[in-house]
Image (tube, rainbow, N blue to C red; front, side):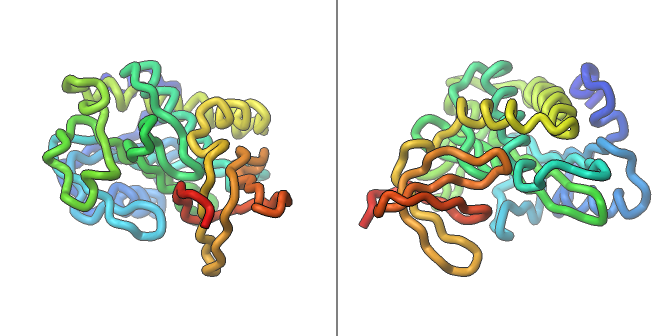
Amino acid sequence: MERAIRQTKWLGKAWQFQEVVTSTQDIAKEWVLKGAPHGALVVADQQTAGRGRLGRWWFSPAGKNIYLTIALRLPPNPPPLGTLSLLVGVSVAEALRAKVSVPVFVKWANDIVAPNGRKLAGILVEGTKGWVLVGIGVNVNLAETEFPDKLRPVATSLCILKGELVDRWEVLAAILLSVESWWERWEAGDLATLRQAVEALDWLRGKTVRVAVPDGTIWEGVAKGVTETGELRLQLPDGSERTVAAGDVSVRPLS
């Protein structure tokens, strides 16, 4: 762990590593309630109840991947919180591109994907009393045969993309440094730079998508990027445009 936080200024200077946890989000939340400092970091080798967005199960075997949560205290007047998942997505994607030299992209609003759309990493941002808990899971050294059957067609790992095993601690260090840098820009209100970075890494842009929003409504159209406040821009079949703040996105032809 020490070498993973060597280059950061404040992120992860308070940290804990555990072999097995239910979820790093659970441990971080407990720590915040007990007085964790800003930038506190929880890393685990295995999760028994890892979860992603919408409460979905996150495959978390031992010795293969990266599972972490960063506890961040919100500033008094924070930028739109809808931009946080994209901030973390850009941070992770840029870190992986720089450190591991793999062509990965951000899929609005919580995923990092390979060029073929297979999921490489997931992001979970949860709020608690003036704090945000940023959970990140990265598939690092899983072989294709090690994924459960239902994940094999839709998931991938750095090892698969790279064709060789990858040092998890080096990847973790790159991610932490990138998150720290982007958080400081976000905290200063530099949403324009964040939006530019998202556009450069946007996997959905120009694709025909279906978006299931939380109230059950389904929208179909062409993804046109994101707004500065983090919403997905969607061009509908009639040519009009609407924005979506939250939803489950799949890429498919219009019906």
